[in-house]
Every structure is written in C-alpha cells, then in structure tokens.
Length: 116
Figure 1 (tube, rainbow, N blue to C red):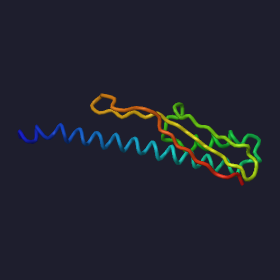
Figure 2 (tube, one colour; figure 1 turned 90 degrees about the horizontal axis):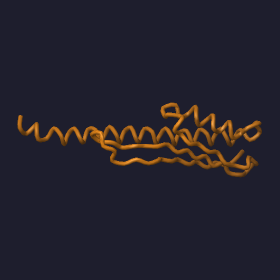
Figure 3 (tube, rainbow, N blue to C red; figure 1 turned 135 degrees about the vertical axis):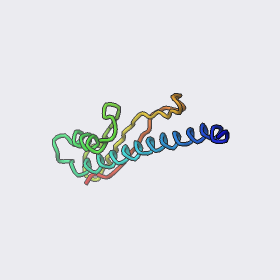
Figure 4 (cartoon, one colour; figure 1 turned 120 degrees about the horizontal axis):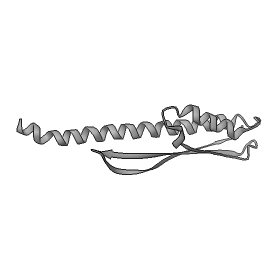
C-alpha cells in the first residue's frame, strides 16, 4: 500500500501528460487538415466570385473540432492560373498539468498549392 501511495502521483502525472499531448496532437492534425481542405478548394475555385471566401468556408467546415472563434485563417493568392495559393491557419494551445499552465502559445499550419 505504501509503495502504491508513493508511485500513484507519478503515474497520475504521466497519465495526464499523455492526455494533454493527445488533445494537442488532435488539434494540430485538425488544423493541418483544415488548411489542406481550404487550399484544395481555393485552387479549383479561381472563377468563383469570391475565391478567398470559398477558401475560408472550406477551412471552417473542415475544422469542426476546433473553436472557430479562436482559429485565425488566411488565404493569399492572385488567383491567376499557375500561381500559388498559400493557406495559413493558427490556433491557440495551452498545456496544463494539475491546474498549472506549463506552456501556451499558437500552433500554425501552412499549405501551398498551385491554382488550376
């Protein structure tokens, strides 16, 4: 019983750090997928009235697991055939263990594709 009482805090800390890392990785993968979806939609939408709006809508629809009010997306291009579309999105993160914030910042993902 004494050994368990000594080891339990270490195991709990390890368990909570794995959970926090999993949440952080899930958010990063979702953000990366959203930028890819936005870039793909943007490169085929150059003839649309508002290709930037189409790009931003695609990012929003792909980032359903994230709090959209905290996502900062951007689509940049001249929308001419053969030019690049650069889609960037950032999202805040915070790693906390036992109620203490260990690290916080903004994760970002960028995707570049050529306009078709």
